[in-house]
Length: 342
Ligand code: F6P
Image (cartoon, rainbow, N blue to C red; front, side):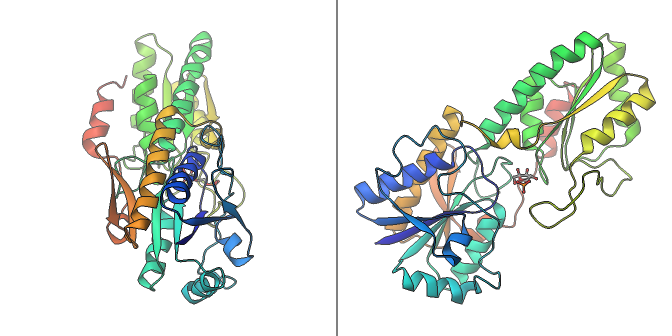
């Protein structure tokens, strides 16, 4: 069997471990021939790929980023020619199937290709952990660790100056990173996209921290919205999805808090630091297991499915059950951290 693999969408720590897992199982154990497309679907369009074998993946598990590169190019772009164009390219390269590593957008595209008759298997990844079809995605644990370390560091400088520190972490649609890092780091206020709050409420929480003699530490997910404000667009340009950048909520919040509470406030936007660098051991293990499972699922002909972690087991779920359903932070999880506020 000859299998192509690609990474699409934003990168995340653990991608290389996943590629290695799939190749070691697929090539060495199951006897596949494997190739890796460079920069996602762009590599398919431009015929840019490398052979993947044991030598190609040696020692890559601890490395951040991806040896294959990634892009947000879609197979449904004019250049790619949609499902028919991809089928043609696969025939030219004598490929029997594709493993697409990516988040929600990538897996949605994988499902569309699968519905058009292309043998595709999804391998989920995202630091946001917002894919509904799996318990955890690799990349998330590393991002949470980095964000937690940032909280620990901001706390000491914040306390030295008796300031309110506002840390913005990633999470466009779901607040998992803010929730977990905020809980681990003992943030006194955690603000998530799922639960808009008023300026008054945020300032009341901040003041109650100050009234107890502490320096407030606020963690805010980039997708958080202040009630009554549709969007906060403070950074120029468009994001990777062609939408106006919606980041910068921390930079909006900090001056508002300072003005309303009189507490000197500072904003930190953690940004892509969360996506870079070495993956945690947890992410390396999860990613390696996901890669191994992807090769096994290909061997079993489970096309149109996505690898999924359920409890401690690697399984597959139909792509149609996994995509387009955002895994939001439920109220019960938010209530847990609300106990710690103030
Ligand atoms: O989907 C992962 C993610 O990190 C989001 O949390 C964030 O909004 C987005 O990617 C940033 O994407 P880009 O790399 O295009 O700036």
